[in-house]
Image 1 (tube, helix red, strand yellow):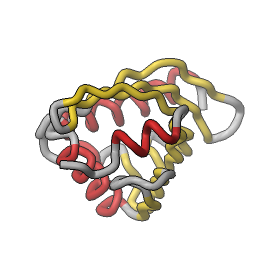
Image 2: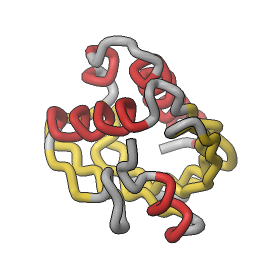
Image 3: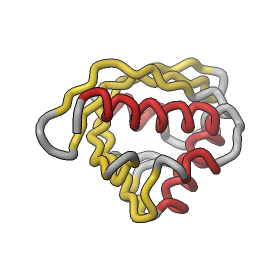
Length: 138
């Protein structure tokens, strides 16, 4: 996988997520997630868990959208690739939850298969703050 290929796949994912988080339909996500995707969110919070399959991952995205009342935004940063099918992407997030604006940083470790995302392990840079932000209040 080249840097340009990885960047295109992640740009498609982030564009589909951005539209969905703003209130758009889930169908564009179907075109970028594999049927057997695994998405892992660590921590002790309302979105933590291991989600298996496209429907479960979209349900997770829906929960996140509801908690952030459609305010969740991603701000992609650095992209690290190697010789394999895994890509690391530094992404900042912002959301207003219960009237408070929050900002955090994560590394998404993605496994790509052809032009789709087959897995994501989300790694917050400040786990305690991430847990507090996504505690489920509201």
